[in-house]
Image (cartoon, rainbow, N blue to C red; front, side):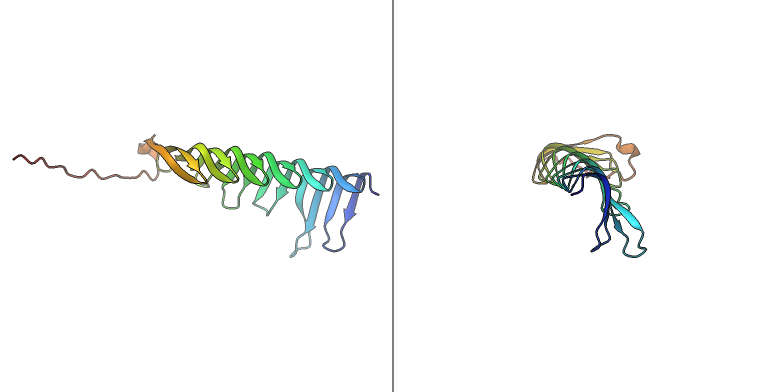
Length: 177
């Protein structure tokens, strides 16, 4: 039974774990790597805390070279505070529960527009605001399962916004009888 520090290689898929062990399980700090199917070089998949052979505590998981999560884990799930970087340049940051944003958090798109507020089960839920930096607008609302139920749109710095919406003012005629 493995205990202390050590390295294990799995023959089936070539995976390697290098780190702490307790009672034959990954427990403590360690790094799990997989061979790249094209080059055969080892690529780090996860580095961080482990408990009872599951990701636990602070760690970083690499979904790809450009998509990864860094933050807290519990029983192999993103749980606690963390930040997810997406391949398209978006970022989710905040409180996670069972692999989904849950609590206070922020999702920023690659164009810098962002939602900040309450989340439940990975969806906007509760009070929050969506900032449209490209349009110079702010939408403050109460959300229910990703749908804004009531809110208020306000302008800020529209003059300098790269894609400020133009709202034509209709002509008005006064008719006297």
